[in-house]
Image (cartoon, rainbow over all chains, first blue to last red; front, side, top):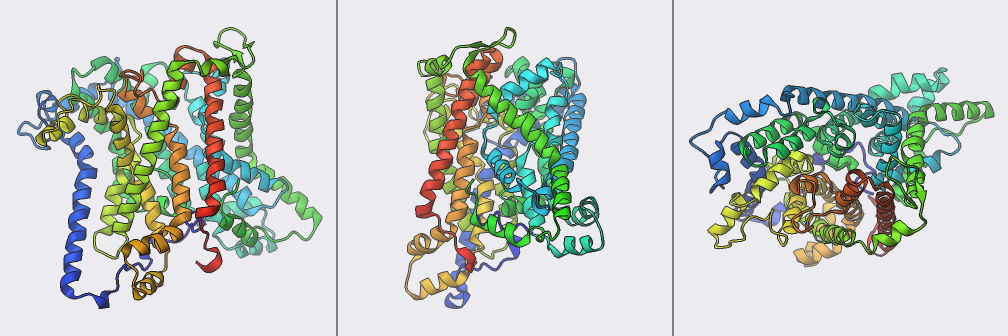
Length: 305
Length: 317
């Protein structure tokens, strides 16, 4: 697959003028360019509308969200909804939900980076019997609907008394269960020159040394993409916490939001949307900072959003 | 797995050099399994083991509190008489069949629009990608529900044009279009992948076609489509498989019930309700295995038919 086989190429620098500039007059060129921007801007407005509407509504009084409200503007913008949203729900403050989400996300990042990089090194750089078979199985798990494992996993964790702890949510991260990241790192490592390992081996370095001092530093881009995506996926994860967590003071934000929806039921739309904004805030900030990495990661490694 | 031919080619060129001594081969085997240990443990304990036990559970009656009771194929035969199950299949198939092609068509169209050296391309690319990052979250589900509710902005906006549908959320006929719009809205991720693929097509091909007098339509079908076919294939496969697994949005928008009138009872939502509200774990396991089988068959069909329309350009790229 074209996209997956070129892990190190950066897309935006590739030459791609679609039309032959010599054959068109300056006038047509300008008209075409204007048309392009008009179409692209209209599309941008449509695509961004739900996000902007969400942010605007979070600042609007309740009376203006339900009613005739396609508008993104209001004369009564206020922070009231956020004040209500920060109070939390079920006797737990929203700050606590944030902390919970953060603990889970950081655990997911640490676990995934450690386990996926080590496993990927085995797949990419060591030849051992069974490697091809295991690699094929790893790829197959990329396509496997994970619903087939959640029931037995739940039963086992339940019998071990680990329901309502973070262990069921984090253990998979430390065991490289997200095959996407293993695959991403394998692809990246295969793009690194084999002479590096060969030279190090001649100098007497073992695999641990080669991995730690040669591969890891060179893998920084792949490690960063992995960290960003595992953070965001963990931050947005709903099904995992829904299955395993029962007490509200352990809830991460998505679960807290559900509780909020259940208990307020459209009586306080404003606060509900304000809390939704708060829950997305870290993801949006991440996106603004790491935009390039994220979009490049998607385009070169075929990662999902 | 018939992944891509490029994969296997790569592994032969850049894998570790041929070991000369058997001692080193032994050391490599030990090191290989040591490094692979985390994945291997996870694979056995979190994937293979659970898969086998859910296959077993699918032939039993199990409620988490009493020991599983073997009932043979009963779960599977009951499934096909269960109206709610059949409804969930219908809802999900509708969603996959209409949502995925629409999303990919939007992704391809916008990627082709953006595939030029114009200013602002980077900005548009990021702006269009953003929904993919947040689209499956609970927050967006809440926003979607508010936007498509009674007197929400969508209802209000449409009534300006004289279309009075009322709220989509409460109308069984309109919930599917609402979910399809939600997935189409996330066209950014496949678009970015398409865009990377489009940039790999050599411009000379288009120039030569222009000189031969080919118009944009012929250029699309004779150059863009075949050259892009591996990427189209990849996006189609991944998006289809993902579409089957929609959960959080369905759960939030329908309050975890799949209503109104079962119109949002997606497959995974029904599986969840059976397994974790009714504690019919055997029944839910049978559903999970059916999903695996169906996704497996679809994957197989994709790979089989791909030979006739997916062109790998070999080494010429």
